[in-house]
Length: 256
Image (cartoon, one colour):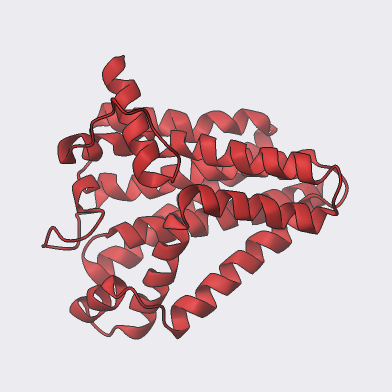
């Protein structure tokens, strides 16, 4: 049990800016095993975002409360996944072959594709959450608590079927890049789907299907363009899945 707790804190320390206990030992082999807890880290990010929204909406309009909730989530992760999305947009948009794409994605500077992709992504999530909170607070809170873990499970699924695309060890996610075992995938899956209990069966099934579609499309895209995945690809997949979950819940709640 102590080992699992340590792995969780390693994942928390790597994927967020939150402090972890001093006894936690960060080692490359442990970091690779800690990826199983990425959806569980999503619980923490979702809880922080939902808490900020729930408090802010008591005294502020919904749109401002959503901005604060999104800002809290981004601050918690250090824009870790948003950065991956921007780099992936730049790489896939500006690169003609695998080598060019990987080189562009590794560049710390953001280009036109990344800037436009990041703005549109944040805008889509903002508008979806604002519309979800137009009449009640619960839809936004439930969406945040569901989307953060499930979208991270979608990212972990890539690690289970694709190889790591970079041959060097200089990438910051190289130490995490290993195929999860069946048991590790089970831990990740449990963390990703448990929050679906906050939804009714139709809503839960809908967002689960949408997340799976995002995962399949991401796998196909990265396999064809890169022959595998990078850390940026995982971040991009998480961002797209999170946004699609918000849109799916918005459609479901508007329809009912």
